[in-house]
Length: 214
Image (cartoon, rainbow, N blue to C red; front, side, top):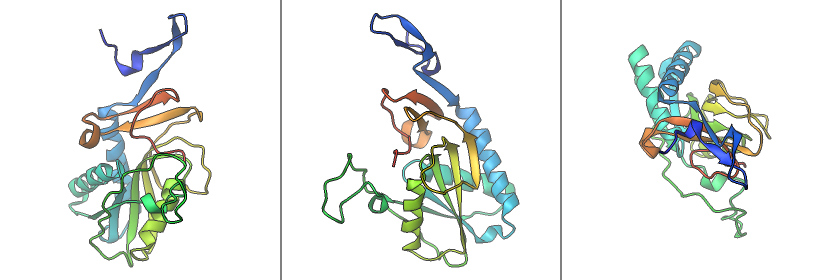
């Protein structure tokens, strides 16, 4: 019988199970719901001019997270914030399409950017699933500023796994998850993956929903 992901064990070459789990669920659906509820509350508390706040999800899983935060804020503050989505593909420092060089790794799918509101004078909260090196967020800020100049930019992430390479710090953090560099964080959401959970996995296991190392 198939075992739950948090109970699976890796096998040694001789077929014996090791003690450490191959993967471990660190946030289940209920925990994700509580975490987003807390972030929504913090956004309301920290922004006196809430009507000037806009949520912008970073593709891919930052987009459904932004939608959920918008709904939660509306339920608590009776205010529907402006909502956008951002594709950062051509702003990443591991994509060389513009210069014509060969990419260093398989390239991500280009998705739509939608910002149907003025950025000037706004507090824009970028929303992403996992914060790792900080390079994704740097690319997102570059992409955002091509559309306008907000008064301030904040950052909300579901999980922060550490290992920063750039001086970027989130304003709202769902869960701090210290990891080694040979581990990965998979964020899986119903809107994309048909399940809500955050899983810590080893490097040898492939998955989706994690921030790319760059």
